[in-house]
Length: 267
Length: 311
Image 1 (cartoon, rainbow over the protein chains, first blue to last red):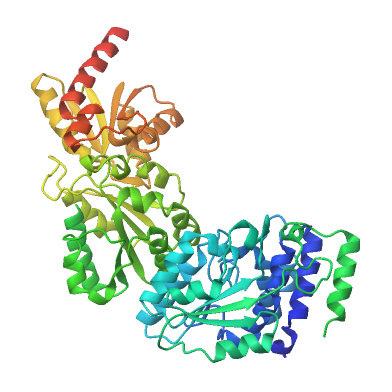
Image 2 (image 1 turned 135 degrees about the vertical axis):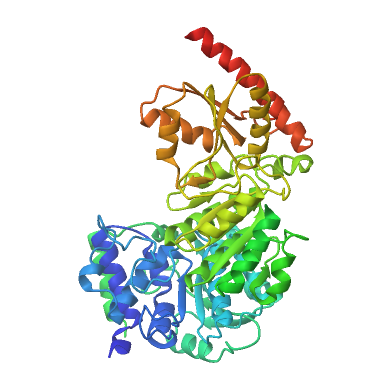
């Protein structure tokens, strides 16, 4: 039942509702990863309970999209509606960036270039503990500007952390412009391959494809994996898609209504 | 101290399988006693301090106790934000081990001189900061703190021979250790420069000036009550540290004096210059910055004279 409810459409609706209520931005980044988050939380992550020490770990390294994760945690039943409605309010645990104190959040993030290093440590810990648990780290494409990310890329490949799966939200945009104009990341796949990772390209808005790609990975032996999810920034809201300003911009009443209408119209 | 640290950690690792040692490609000929006994629990992550602390964060979240080892400047400053946003923010037992406090890497030059590490670490609430004065105290301090909840910064020296007279390897969290008692003057010090202070105090005793010398190895939690009680007894106090005068023991003592409304004058001996190109041995640099025992004696004589003239 929860698996059915946990859909990209539901995540996007929550992202729009909460962004509007709190009058905050980062809408585009959260919409961009809605399908990836839906795939992970509905089909991929093995989390019997958020407190289970042997659960799969998930690191949202692009912490500014945390609202999409809060939506998933709510749809899983781990975050109440009342808690969700405190997003960005005074005294909340639910800020723009995720805090580990939130039930279901494994690591505090928000500073780009941090999450993959932490995820590599979590994957190494699983190996040392002879556990089959896996670690998923969702990074943004622009986050690959950070040198520390490549430190972790080298480390994970050297130690052949097969249980580490990086997912890249390749939407081609960052705060100030398009990634090709700011600091080119092309060719992304070849770069990761050159560092010794197993590289998989996928349509980042196809939940079934994302799920199947991850299901096909050998997480017991071999190199670490990167799933390059080709996405559209602000996916699902036509007037926002691929527009730089929606990295930070909050919605007006009219913009919110139009966005919601479009999301409601999707299957 | 680094040798004492490695041996002590290896002993602890025999008892507790959670302990791991991670290095950023430093500690050659130092870390082998651990690495050879526990090859599966020793990781050289390469020259990548940010990743080292990030990896340690992931390991600690899973219940392990990773010790991250490097030169003090590299491990405290390059991954500083990773220390802040990982183990400090999440209260995880990551141990940051910085070797070579102050000018211990002498001729290696300014990039290797740790003159602000304690200051920046002390700024972070929830981070225990330990700066032992000699290898005996380093061992005691590690034994007393390794299992403490939350993260720890250990500022260690390279010297595994020198012993600070009167210290006897004592360490207690949140306390000072007195190494000498006298009536004329109070000297409060931190780290391996304590041996210079001991020499200065002995030389001053020969001139009829008796000093009380206190070692602060538990920088955080700070020995505030001990300091307040001691400072109340002296009109003049010197703080001595191989560190900038801002941020570490000189600052701590000044804070206690100000917050408790104490009447003593604080003379902070430490580094006051901007980093320069000129370098040399540790002894040369200590003397250049007024931290050699001879220079400290001169400072004490001058300050006592000024104090007498003003009262």
